[in-house]
Length: 56
Image (tube, rainbow, N blue to C red; front, side, top):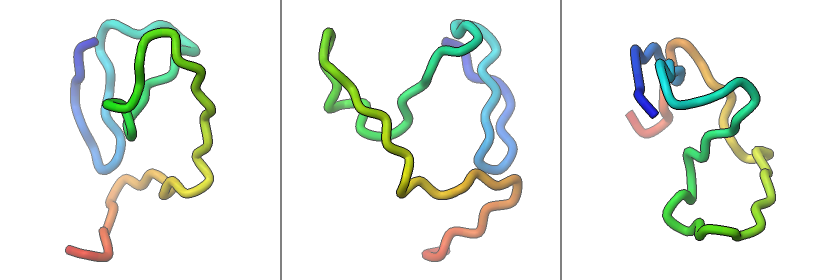
């Protein structure tokens, strides 16, 4: 996978993904081959073009 330009919380992936594939951004080091995965984005912040983190 090749990462391209970033703007705010958005990053373009220029090569290495097909339409409909999912990318893991959190907890990736806990994953193992063949492991069952449940996707739950309930607590994820909404992506923004100009994010303002509370701790900045």
